[in-house]
Length: 133
Image 1 (cartoon, rainbow, N blue to C red):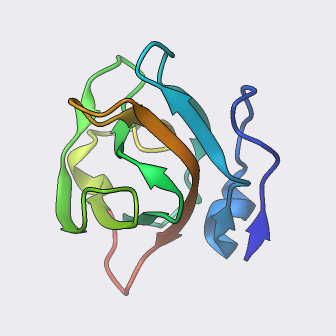
Image 2: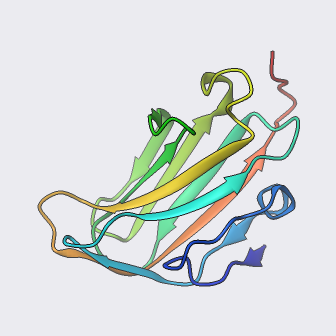
């Protein structure tokens, strides 16, 4: 898995990075900060995103944003809400035709917490033998 540069500065993740899997350097934000946004390109033929927030302290939430700013619903979400570990699966077939090629990972502060520190995002695009219609 590749390591991305610190994502506090805007950065684009390539389709190749998403196909191989990528882990960001530690991310931190307070409730006064804007959400961290990491744009990425989905490799052709991939229909799922598997992502995890792990490590650090505090509370962080991951969402995947479409180009129009609406959120893509997580097909599955499991884990702890204390910044320790959260696993997400997103079905890109629900993104709409042509929208799944360019999306944004957004990491926000969990409501009711002061922020998060040293949380890493791991993200990978997968096909699992399923094709987009």
